[in-house]
Length: 108
Image (cartoon, rainbow, N blue to C red; front, side, top):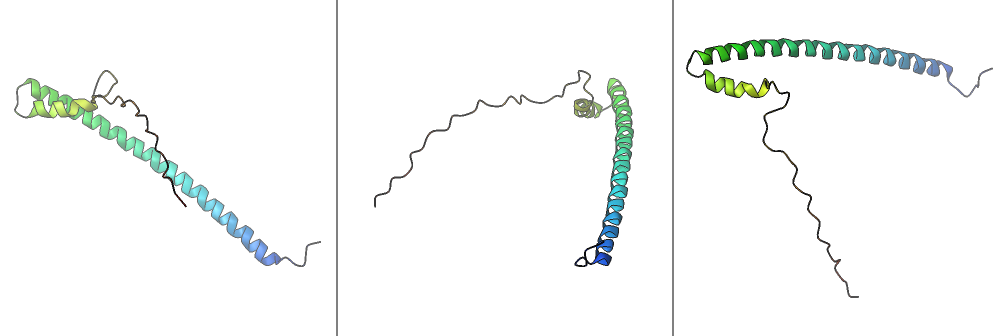
């Protein structure tokens, strides 16, 4: 009870190909999620190492070792205890009102 106008072998090949592609997409999405989680883990490791280095630099600065004051000043922007960032004023400027333009007149 199938249409004789349809190439059913080709139809089945298309279905099989689609199933393969769908399975490949699912595996790639799983791989992408795993890599993203792994990246987060490495980000956390880097943060902890940076925090340790920052604490060590603050200690060395307190002992008046040359160069650590500059390093601590540079790193302090990443370890701000107030939860805000040390940035310059980024208040947007007031919007300007566009001046209307008159369309050119044509004489014909």
